[in-house]
Each structure stands twice: as structure tokens, then as C-alpha cells.
Amino acid sequence: MPVAMITGGASWFSRETTRLLLAEGWRVVLGEINETNLAEVLGEIGDARVTGGKLDVTDLAMVKSFADKIFRDFGSIDALVNIAGGTNYLGMPRLPFHETKPENWDLVLRPNLYGTLNCCHAVLPHMIAGKRGSIVNISSGMGLRGSARMTTYSAAKAAIIGFTRALCQEVGQYNVRVNSIAPGSAESRWQPDVSKGGERLPPIGSRTSARDVANAIAFLISDKASHMTGACLDISGGTSLH
Image 1 (cartoon, helix red, strand yellow):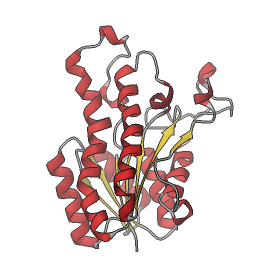
Image 2 (image 1 turned 90 degrees about the vertical axis):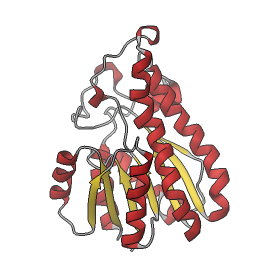
Image 3 (image 1 turned 30 degrees about the vertical axis):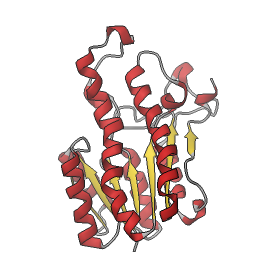
Image 4 (image 1 turned 135 degrees about the vertical axis):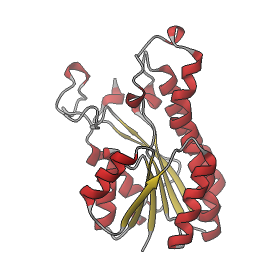
């Protein structure tokens, strides 16, 4: 049974991805910094093939310990899905860059960019040793086009795309694939109604759902995408067109 490690385990992206992977015969381990939210998701899914634990992706030692335990318990890490990140939980106002506080930059960069670097750094030795694996890094439409008053976040998400494209060139020889996804304005705990968004709605007529993103993740880590690496899938309903 293949094993997937998913960070940001209490997010709606993670919840929907887990459901899809269970249907396809995967075992899933969720890492999440908010243990209350994690317990809620684990209880909602209610499947013995899904486990989870506390994980702060900004703490490299914790990430390595988390990944090592998965390998000891199950013998492999076949997929890593880096979902942890975002900004809503920080509660910071959206400001022009020149009005932001430098001490707040790392509050955005560490979970969104360094969290992805930490998890890849911890998991890759296991994948390289096993000569197989797939990594999916969640970027954002803001990483493709940028967004005013979200400059630091845009920078972090753009860096994830560049990192993905560079890393795939290093690890392809080990049969490890690395891809990214750029969701649009998406369904989440903070914005659950995909029909709302006014003029910000994409051409397709609704915001990105968690299932839309989960479908892309499940595809990228499957054999159907066996010759895809370094790609960035735009799952935004056309938002990035304008």
C-alpha cells in the first residue's frame, strides 16, 4: 500500500485529497500544527488508513523526525504533498509593501517557502534510496501573476514554482518527480463559499473548490502523470488569464 505524507493536514485541500487517495488504495499520514483541527479532520474521515500528528513545517528537526517515523512505521514515503502555508491564519492586514514591517516578512516566508524546503529536504533521502516518489508543492495563482498588497506571499509562492523546476532536474535520475499546483482563490475554512467573489470570480464562474485541487494532486502523484515533472498546473478557473 503506497504511503502519502500531507502537510497542512487540517486544511480542506488535505481533507479532500485524503478522501481521493483512500479510494485509490493509499495510506495517508497528515501533519498539522493545529492539533484541534487535525483531530476534527481525522474524526470526520474515520478511516484506520489515515493517521496524523503535530507538525510545524518551519522546524526542520521536527519535520525530519516526522518523516523518519513514517518510514519506520510503513517502510516508504511514496508521495509528499506540501500544502501547509497560507496567510489568513496570521490575521495580518494586506498592505502595500513599503508599509509592511520587515519583522513580519518571515511570518509569511517561513511556513510558505521554508516549510516546503524543509519537507522536501527531509523526505528526499527516503525517496532517493527507494528510487521512486512523487512530490507536489502547492503554490498559488499569486505565484504566477503576483498580487498587490500580497507581495511577500506572492514572492514565496513564485519561489516554490522555481524551486520545483530546479529540484525536478536533480532527482529525476532517481525516478522521483516534483510538480507544483497554482490554485486560484480557493475554498477554505476562511472562505467556504465558492460562489462568492464578485468581480474576482474567474471566467468559469466560481472560485476554486478544494476538490478541484485534490483532483490535481491525486493525478500528479498517480501513474497517469508518470512522465510529468517540473510542471505547474494552474487550477484557477481562468483567474490567471487576467
